[in-house]
Structure formats: structure tokens, C-alpha cells
Length: 258
Length: 258
Image 1: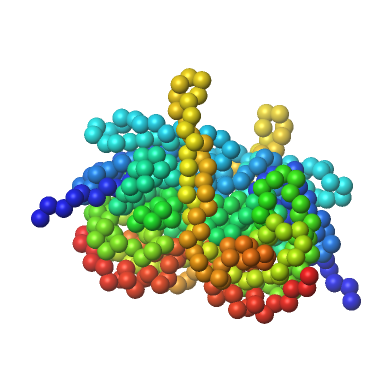
Image 2: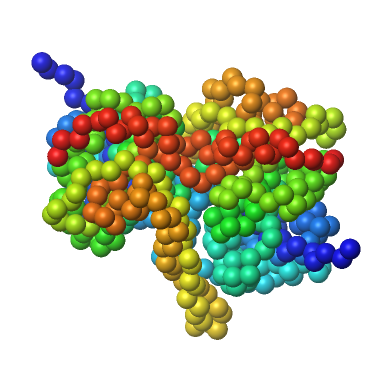
């Protein structure tokens, strides 16, 4: 049986030269025809930002032999929008994968993450989409243990599809061997506890470096954070309907006095 | 009965000099003690972006007599983080309001909006939070008809509180009179249909302006888009748990082959 190879859009937020996206595109080349569109500079923490009020650049580059690649001056979400409109021109790819992010995007980090926001934008465009992230911020992180998991997850998404308006958030523990398996999870309830490092510039003006500690408040055993801590790959099905449906009845009982 | 006036944090994404935030802080002054922390430049479309890898500035300014105000070099979400940590120093305000945005933030726009992301960040910090937006992009938009609605909504939130991990997304139609009332809604399913205006710079290099049309695919009568189109103020209870809980059982039936 010969089956047409799927077309796969590969994006990220660490920028087009990041090692993580190279691993991701290599795994995708095993199962489909790859087009890479990624930011020309690091865009970590850009969330779902889009570029308004200034122009965007999109340029084809030859970074790895035989790979169709474009660098974009905008955010990760801009990359997906430009890919769909200017490269695929309406003929959408069968899969959109984002990452592999250098650093975890579990729990509340789904909101801050450019990697996950690019995957969310793929899902908004109706493309089955998955974000991948590894628990290692290092530039030279070892992604080798992620490869077989990424391949099987991508193949399952291509085979089964994903329910409308949903996508996957996949995180990998930083364990080279003995990963215990895959766990389907919910997003852990947590927040960042910020610390601002206060300094004076050479002109005696105050400035701040934002740092923080991840504060996991959630003791549930069905969360992505619990899975990662215990050596599993976590998959959280993710949606972009942010309605708190369960709160609607309560609000309907309020008295608004205008 | 003398009751302590609540402390209210006012933020926005259009920048500290925008007329919308002036209206919002004036209404808040009627019910509490106001602290304003807003970006020093427009930050529309910044979503939940945070500033990583470069320092932040936070400076007190005297823009309106008697109002405690700070301008911040970062994103709307940075403003909330700096306010909580450097201004309130852990003693959290009783309310966080964001806006009034010059332009609607209903439906899918909750993801792209800096206004709403600032309110989301307030809710993550455990502060009852509300984002307000008006269907008028103009700098000199008339916000007068929003005032009584903003006041009653803020008072109801202060009186009733909000369920844990939820906030409100309030949008106003651009109608000066005859607003039909308030509707509690769900986020409409929609997307932006992008159009990229393609140009050449003076050096003959291609660049793009991103524009787009809002594509409302949702015919439901319980959505924020339906409410606005029909002359109501829409309130969507919003949450930041993005888990697609209903998809978990299906993913548990998949066969991952590693």
C-alpha cells in the first residue's frame, strides 16, 4: 500500500537555530514531508503574542540540507499564521508540531509558553497540533530519549485525529533511561512565585530582573507535574475555550444595579 | 457603618496614557483606593507574554492629580507581577481591573489580548479580577456609557467574590444609549482569517503587514459575540485551566508504541 506522506509544519519558540527544533524536524522527516517556520530569535515567554503595528519578515533559509525552512521576525504565533497563509496558502498541513522546547511547559506554563501558543494557534487553524517540551533549559540538552515518544505520539495523532478545538501538550522528564511510560493528565494547578532582583544602572536608575520559583500547589496524582516528577512523559489534552462554564449559573444569580 | 475602602489595582495593555484606563481608574476611585500600574507603551496583542532575558523598569509618575501611578517597561502581565511583588509586597489588593481596552476582547481574542492576560495573571495571583473592553478601536472612543456597568460589576465582584481560579471578561457594545442589559455568556467559537499585505522595502526586500477579518463560526445564542451584536454587555466567566478534560478518556484508549 502506498499512502501519501503527510505534510508537517514544525515551529518553536527558542528560535530556528535551537537544537530542540532540529531533533523535532528529524523525527518528523521519518513520517512526513516537513516545512519549518520558526522565529529568527529566541521568543521564550511570548505566550500568545502577535505582532501588531509593525511589519513582519519571512525569509527562506538553507540551514539543514534538504529541509524547507523559513525564519520569521515575529512571534511563534505569527510563524503559524504566516505559514498557513503565505506558505501553505490555505492547503493546510496534516500536522503541526512545536518544540522541542528547552524547558518544561507543564501546568500553568502553557499560558506563558510560545511553544504551546504556537500549537494552540495550529489548533485554532484546524490543524491537529502538538507541543513538545523537555525538562532541561540547557542549549546542549540531550533530546535523544524523546525521539521514540515523539514519533509514536505524532503517528497516533495522524492516525486518530484530535477532537475539534483540542491539541496536545507533551512534556518529557529529564531522564535518559527508565522512563516509566506515558500518562494522560490534567494541567496541574500552580503558579510562579516571582522574585525581582533589584539593581542600579550606571546612571543610578533602578531596574529589575524577573526570576521566580515554581510553586506547585496541587497534590493531585492525575496532573502533568505529578507525572513528570515521577518519571513519566505527560500528555495534557488542551483547549482554547477559556470559559469557566461551571461559574455561569452563579453569575446569573447576581444583581447588577445600573 | 464605616467599612474599609478596598484597594484596587488598575492595569491595561493600551499603555498608561490611553483614555480607556483613565475612565476605568475614575470609576474605581468611586469605590476604592486605586493603584495604577500600566505599560509605558502600547502592548496590544501581547497575550500572556512575559519579559525574559532583559531587565524591567518600574517608575512612579504623576499623570493625574492624587492618583498613585507607575509606568512599566514590560508587558501587561509583567505589570501585574511587579505590582504584586514590588508595590503591594505580598499584601494583595482586593480587586484587579484591566482596561478599558480600545477594541473588543470577546471570543478567541481572550488569547491574544494583553488586557485579558493581565486580568488572568491577577486571578492566578488569587486576586478577584475583571477585564473590560469596548467595541471601538479609536483613541478618542466614548467610554461614558460603560461607567455604570463597570461600577456595578466591580461592586458585585467585591461583594460576592469570584470562584477560585476564575475571572470575568466584560465587553461593551459601541452603543451610546439603549444598551439592553448584561448577559452572562460563554466564549464564542471563532477565529481570525488573516490577510497579509505584501510590500517591498526601499532595499527591495519583502515584508508583510498582518491584517485580518474576524470569522464568527458559532451560531449559538449564548455566546459573547451574540450578546454584543444584539446590544448587550457580555460577561464571560473565564478560567486558566486549559485542560480539555473531556478528551482524556479518548487519549487513554490510544496505543503508544515505544
